[in-house]
Length: 268
Image (cartoon, rainbow, N blue to C red; front, side, top):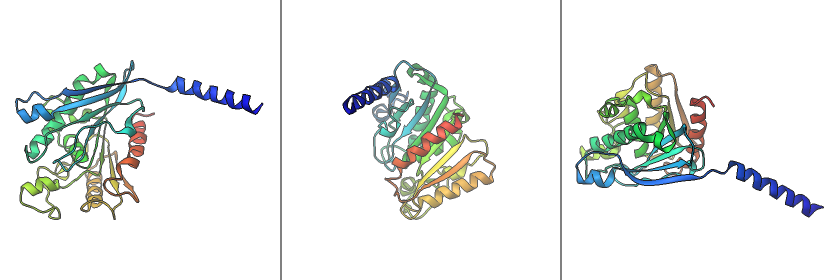
């Protein structure tokens, strides 16, 4: 009797898996830039991971970290098999390009998504932008300062939500390095998200590592960014601190927040 019960339970579990299992497609190295620059042709490519035979899916554009000097595109494991279309983006890196090139590439990639993602089952009305560290910084820059996306005919307010993971909010420390400054010598200039605060920006969910474990006081930067957004009148801005997790490790638990907030913003 016990063996029969176990077999029945196993059969039912297999049925549940069969019902909820989805096939996914993965398309690599799609060029998104029209630049004639040789380095841009090498780096300005993206990958698209999408549910097969589905439409109107939420989209997550993911920018990798690496201090704007390193790293490469990938699809985070935490975003796979979640019903999302996920776009992993490469962009040009310092010092082989300028800081403006890095941000411009991020904007070009987001614009490509708005104009093309429905071919891959995504909804242009459900595009979320996210990334870790340098990727969080790029998320903030293209979503807060409207000029970067406007160059490509896209209004930054079309973004459904910004979800930066531990993004620098003053001028990025490797941008400052090019200016002859040290990582602990903070500045706010045109390359700082804090210089472009506006009340009508898309919903922004700021996620930081533990304030005692973060890189270069990154939590305090993000907390100040959050506070200033609130003071200028932004109505949908949240700050999370992943206690016990340092700058690198905070990304894994942050994906739980990302998924919950995407559901909230979409009214699900």
